[in-house]
Image 1 (cartoon, rainbow, N blue to C red):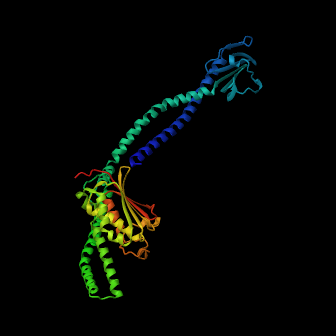
Image 2: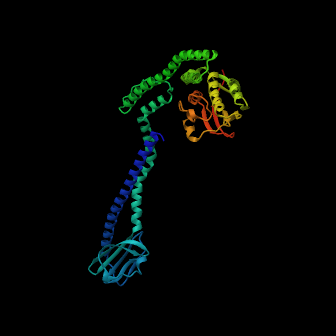
Image 3: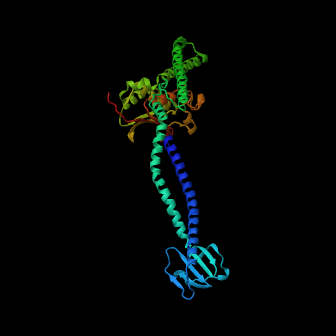
Length: 436
């Protein structure tokens, strides 16, 4: 949920809670005021009735007044009464002037009794009348406020949006900023809360840019510098072998030089695989043709281990770069060859699912567990380390390069168990415009 929505809901909730508390308080106050007013009314009516000239010989019964009951007694005889109370006895011995709450005529009423000389008056009013009056008063007062809540919610939303406008603007700038754009945020703001955020972000951009360039160029420059002495070493080792020199140390040196050369090449590729360098030169590329090229390049290794390899599915065209795709598919196929035992099986599948193009490779190797799947894209990490049962040499950079190239294409990569018994790697490309 956005900050704007959260603040709007929070403020609106506080307003509604305040209205509810005000409603509750108003209800109690209204009830007390109504009680006082209606009690005074009962007292006034009782005094009016007791002053009336009535005779006990001819009791007068009147129709019930709206929500009002009464009895008038003269010398312990009922002289006048509302019809609903004409048969209700009154215990004169327990007569006590004042207010009480009783059950009369089948309802709960507030009773007031008054005695003067030989006259006694009982006057009562249903409690429901008092409750209804209180509810009417409080609803009349609160209804306009309740109707104003939607308008208040709209105003709160508008003002919260206006208050958060600098933060929204900053968020939009960061959202549309390229991953390699480390320039300082150029605009100034008078809001004291936003100023330190922009200042710290600009400082962070500086430090990240420095680290980015340092990492990017160090590996590339180091690899370039290592190429020349490595080439010289390889030539000298080759000359010694050509001269018939044979020793365990020479074999170990040759393998070490080959391994170091492979690391250098991988470091150079890793330094080159950045999105900004490649996306501008994308063009329509046949994934089937690239896959066939990769298989052809690595066929000597496939044939050496007597692997069975197949390419299934229909071709699809994506916007891409031939070098990066050859590197991507080549590293994945190289890993499959590396870790699949002799006379194993490798299958490359091209398919379309849910409007996405999928390049998938399965092998019949030993596969990897879930913990290794989480680490396989880390630089210099090798499944099983240098003691892997395959005995294959590696630098641990291949899958890191794969992940970098996948990010260039805004693609997704997934690892799963294969139906062949080993590992399945799926690279999913978005379908898009491939026109030149």
